[in-house]
Image 1 (spheres, one colour):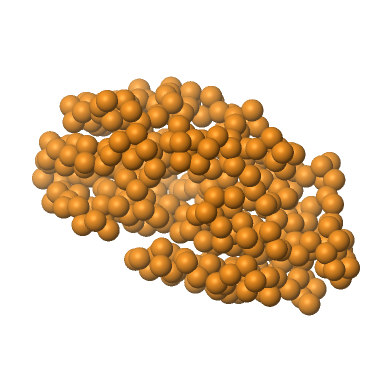
Image 2: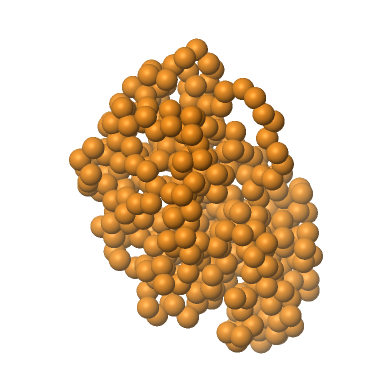
Length: 387
């Protein structure tokens, strides 16, 4: 058995990479864990472009991590040969999260299992109306610790039996924000994000065609000869417009880089259907608008503080105001962040995750002993958890 404490990261969805990457860096750089990346065999099929497999290899090289692929929870169990922390960025009782959930269910007691909130509206944390229709009002986890982005009173989709697992850490993504000044000058393009694969755009009727139509009309209206006038960012996992070969206007450039490589401050504004990328836009400080379908069928209540755009005329008016007077949107951004008590200060987020790593190191002998004793659960007192 490996005697050095391990930090093991389960990777199932391509979105997991962005959420887990800052903690992989912390585990290696700040705390000296033996870092392992355990990748579901389903991951390669989800990464149609190959971008995320290349990213994983680079992350592994930078953190001296070992990469293993598992096809089942039993193969994963054979790889869990030590003690420490076991992280997942997408783990719940839902079928789409089964690879990580099943590994958590069979993991030895020598690992403290940690599930991270991976989106603003995230299963088991905060559900949209579409989530409730598709999955029910709550979800549960096999984790020992569940890390949320915002204050506990706003985590309303966690099963009551699970609330004792909850700690507030903030989103790990704020640990990899851009800080260097941007070069000045030049016209900046707008950023349009699509997540047309989302259950939200089909639960109350098919709204995909409406989004594509208004997007195409908007791109034609803002075509002033600059290239690109608009950047399109497909959802990392969905990639709907690319996979379905939706024709793109000539003044549109596809931006598919991982979020930690994309400095959103270089865009003059951002528009998206309800999605976690709206939070990324807000944190980057750019004018941000939510696309809402004209009939108002889509649930956008959690984004009510941000301006909404539906028609092409509203898209154009927003883009012009964003370019002419970007400061006029600051109040809406602040209201959005304040309403949910989102923890976004990088120093505080780092401190809270650091407390989790430090707690695991302090309890490493007990965790190792739990494995040697063959399944005795190591209980961590609530007072030891970071707050």
